[in-house]
View 1 (spheres, rainbow, N blue to C red):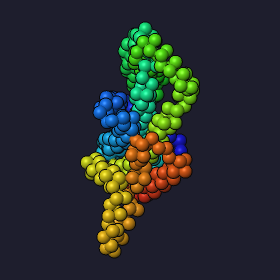
View 2 (view 1 turned 180 degrees about the vertical axis):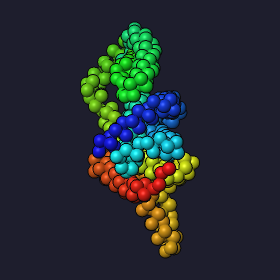
View 3 (view 1 turned 60 degrees about the vertical axis):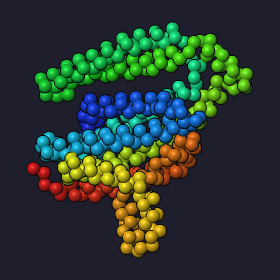
View 4 (view 1 turned 120 degrees about the vertical axis):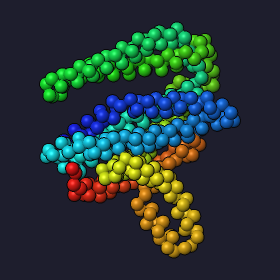
Length: 357
């Protein structure tokens, strides 16, 4: 188990240190935030459209990262013989695959949480208007963000170079305190920037009028926040959970295929699985209506091998503001964990017998 955790953490660092990870994360986050401006002509359905597009963007980002980076962390290491050195040690090959999978899932979950936070903030900014307007405070926070972000980035890069130099000289692991301090400053600067955007909307007098209107309507601040959480917060959280479960099954398949096939083949197979998983339900119903026994039997067998991603795709349900029950989330989690476990049981059994040169 320690070997799995060690490989998982190394894989997580390998993925999160790549610029592609942050580039795609930033682009998708920007698209989610800007979706509020693209729904101005949807006839009072702005929030529904933003919720649907936002949750769909979570799954799409997870799919892109999975298919792009699985080949790098598994196939490329096997082809470059980097994994041969690792597997020559007393480490089971199944632990190697599981470590790669858990590291990939850790990086995917972290990114999906960030995107879900952006979606939540976008919905909040659409709902509360200018209740927190304070341009003076917004300016101070913006100045703090401008100071913290470059300092954090420079400190992180400097710390990373020093750690690499120390590791090269000592042939061991060097402390990364400066890197983590830089990351902390980057997070603080990002939070300050988001708060500056929040307080830049309107004047204090506008916020006072908004709160007075709520009080006259008989609503307290907590009631207002609670109503928003029930309408949007819980739905975003449920969408995040289902997105993680969907991406988990795709990652299990992609990592398993990457251990045996070239990158192009594993990516193509995962993309095909993604499409079939979302269309298997309607396809199965259409074929069963034809009442042709061989086709019906074939589609049922195929349905056992392909994950039912449509079972986890409730974007239309979420766009209507409907919440799902904890029992449904439990069944979805059981489906995802069972499918991933079966995939890795089969792939690890074959990977143990594969000859690696």
